[in-house]
Amino acid sequence: MNRKIIIALLIAALPFAADAQFSGILNKVKTKAKQRADNKVDRGIDKSLDEIEGKKTTTTTSSASPAPKTETKEEAVEEAGPKSFTKYDFIPGEQILYYDNFEGEALAELPANWNTSGTGEVTTLDKFAGNWLRLHKPFTYLSSNQKQFGENYTIEFDVILQLKNTGWMYPEFYFGLFSSKDEPNGGNNFLKDQKKYASVVTTIYPAEFKNSKARVNSYLESRSYFTGDNKMYERLEKSYGKPVHVAIQVQKERLRMWINEDKLFDVPKAIPVGVIMNQIYFEVGHTNYSEEQYAVYVSNIKVATGKPDTRHKLIEEGKFSTTGILFDFQSAVIKPESYAVVKDIAGVLKENTSIRVKVVGHTSSDGDDKANIELSKKRAEAVKELLVNEFGLDTSRLETEGKGETQPVGDNKTKEGKVANRRVEFIKL
Image (cartoon, rainbow, N blue to C red):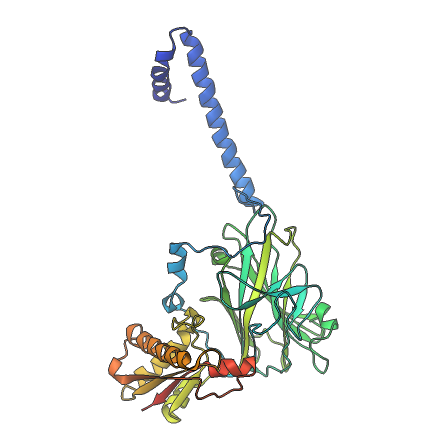
């Protein structure tokens, strides 16, 4: 033990030593110091073992259904605004094939025309707008989509992994697409066997201590077609309890996948040749956590075809329309996942410096007519401000206008139609 520390402790003990033997005090000091040193070593060993076993050093067991985690100010700054997605290069398809945000679905019930091997229910969340489908272990969920995806398409959805470590491994989260050929793609047989004809599945392994990872595999006629390696994704755990945006782009055989702003995979030959996919599915793996100790939610599922030719549409045809610029619910705040679309438009305008453009906002028929006009105006102005402030375009080249719900391009009675109507147009002047 350090001699200076012993002397300091003895000096501190002298006022109380009148009736005690000095040697006894010395022995107590040495014993106490040894105990504290031993305790420190024990804590270090425990911490190392906890990390190896995938546990936190501090555990909390929740007896109630978990609510999404409250963001700290630091986390909110990190994730807020399009600038956090500056490396994001995903651009969604031009034509909407399928969309489901569970709007109008009965709460506490499985959404209409979905199928599951167990149970699931539509719910609302305090901190996040809209309806969400809660998924349960260890069940599979087939969407209500009935359309073929073609060769070139994009898939997007939001997922919330409400996870809090109490010592067990987190459940794996699977999402994928498959072909049912001539069979109904919502049939019970595909709840257990998505690999029958062809499928691609992404497995997410949530963890703590920067150990989260993901993997992509594909199958053709129940045999392995592409076997990917695990990709570490350390940042996933920072997003537990809040929406994570997943985006997939398929171009014939090629598959790219992003989680939030990060591109995790770019696999040239992941999709079996000549196979047309027509279904999306989700699955939650087994876990020892009870239903009250974890939750997985999905929403805003969108499938769209192709990749828009921004330059041709805007410069040669005189108008480019996109549903890829997204906003917060009933707000003019642009979502970060819109960054690549706006960047693409900015690039075209920078290459064609003589072009002036009117930015026009449109909404669906939901809500008040006058309010929709004002909202569409504010959204068009927000896009203009992003083009000017982030990409350096001259403000004199841009005008804005809001049309609200007055010029629909889709049927407002369908979810797909509403999404198509919530668009931003760029019109050459």
